[in-house]
Image 1 (tube, helix red, strand yellow):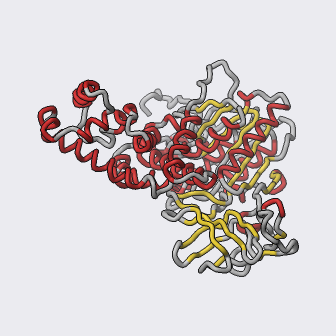
Image 2: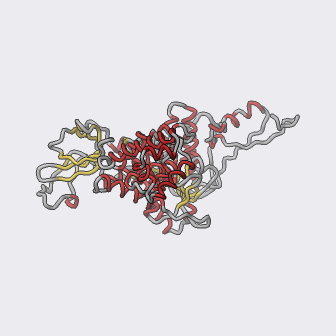
Image 3: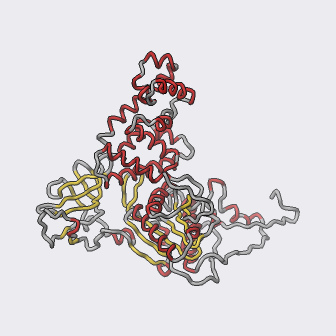
Length: 510
């Protein structure tokens, strides 16, 4: 209204189907209400796509058609028919990331440039699994609009605590965490302590733990001495834990004892930062499963493994690289090959949108934006299990996948170790050769089944081994118990049966 002349001459362009920034007041009503204000306006529909193939457009149109707050229109193109949209369902996010990486490797063998490949996800915390997988496959990637997972402040903070626990002489770790969360210990105080510890030729921590009360009182104010003693008390509490807790449990203790979670909640990006820490805990727990060392050695190994993943060569702006990007950041971009990952209820659509129809419609628009970034090949994927707030749970595929017609969707299940007949002949290669085995033995459970133990609570069966007179089960229980190996016939457990559980094929829509 402020820029129109007396003749109400104005021209505007907008796409309400791509309105994904409502918190910036970029809501679809800005364009939807335009005709009510300017009743005689001429509407020109820009519905021809010069980017995407027909199957991709049909997938996008079929999803967005479920929104009510929009102009009714349908995209069309003169482009070639193109490949079907591919949908893969994986066991967990690790398998999803590795499989996506292998698919990208195949694309590069067909001469596709890495610059023409993008992996898109709903939240930044999802990037970790893909960063690790792409590193392991030797594939260069560029993280758009964000910081690499292991370079994020909250991740470096928690790992610094871990480093100081296993190496009290790590002065760099000390300097990072002495005032994190804030304890009123500034650079001037650290410099004073640094002078004294250098005179004594010891580390920060060694000096503070051995300095007399009089020495500290003469060096620092009472308030600062109290803050130093508070930190030392926290350190001693954590030090007790490293021999009895696994790495992910140590991370939990660090967060709890330091009140790091409360510290993050006061940050405007606190929710996202907490999601990143949950992802770090998940990574630590997965690492513990395959690491046979004792708890202290396992923590050292986990730190070293994290360092390897953080020491990735930076990508020159002229280098070819895969794009890792959130769906929000992808708006306005286009790629020949697009992978949209983590298409599950709670992620896409996000759990925060479930109670509001307007927010749910925005999540659908966000999915639409991601799909329409693809020019030739679109890959969609979900996992059958995922961690939410640090706890594994069954994941339900996104409702948006159900809104895509089957005629444009090529479905493939990549879930491993699931026997849909609920029976399995055990493979000899997984059996200890010293045990006498009945070659024809069958079991009435499957990998991934829920297990309830009278002491350890709820867990998930990850693997098993048939012995002469029993079956050894490897079960991952919820924190604080973690991974346990128990004998089926002697343990007080209940395993879900086909009659008690939904068939996985129906549940995940495979």
